[in-house]
Image 1 (spheres, one colour):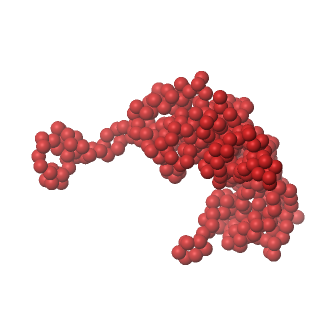
Image 2 (cartoon, one colour):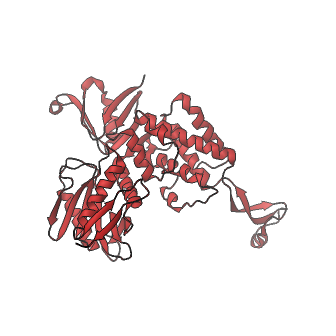
Image 3 (cartoon, helix red, strand yellow):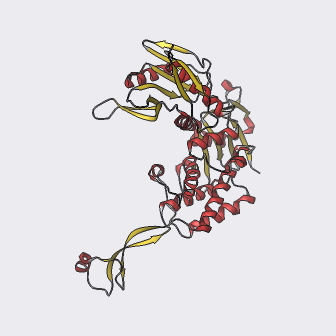
Length: 420
């Protein structure tokens, strides 16, 4: 029988000394000490286990049939909506199945089933094929004869040919194969759904090479057209599993993998994607804007969010996202002032999922700093609109601003300046 140690994201939990074996505590410390703060039973802890996850949620397999479950503070439905933006799943038709998930494990399984179904549908219609250049020794000439090799090697009755061959063993199909393999190894898919994921994996395994690793940067180099548009959704979901599942102890050979989502990173990606889609038409938006501070590029920053004038290179404001609550903003203010100075703007913002001083502004020298709240426990669209309204209001304090509410996420927010 599996025994579950249940935690909630960023919340401190205590367990009696006999609830967690010492070897399990040591395993948590050794493997996940960077993600979970753990104190062993001692007089200091009143002989209790004390565990507190950092910015991570997910399911982790441990030894002796123990599992570690870290629940999100954010409603499960909103987790998916954040992924929708962060991984470009806006047009997905499976939204309802996922937002109805009761817990994180059910959500994981539902998303895995969606990927399996999409892969099977594509396999039934025909997997994407490409022509790849191949060099082989053949009994007959095919493509272009490699005359250089003909002179370099002894005659064997076969000729060296250079030709293009159509194949489905391409990265577009290798990505979902890799993702499905990782899903199967997590052990988080229940028996009644397992056969579907296995069928999808087998449909690819028999015709593509199962890569030992997929480079995360490959996703930025993929492009799609009207004939392979469904691959964009397949790759987006595959990317989620590739980025958020990993081997225990860093060993790819182990059968059991962990499923851990970095909420700090997800919040940053979600906020950037939301603002990218909803930025006022009169502004331009950039994310992870690089600032090089030395000629050798040894020192450089990546600014989370930057807004520019539509037709100029002038920076309107900069912003930094921070996935934390109830903490001091002093160090954050120092960081964002440096960013603002680097981009030569006086308007800067710190964006939190919640903040004890949200919607307040304060001065640091010539810089105006705004603390913006982007709550994740309510309607995300409304949270985003209120955050953007506040940013626009502060940045346009010299004009009377009228903001027209967007009817849906793609319509954006428009600014109209009216002379005083």
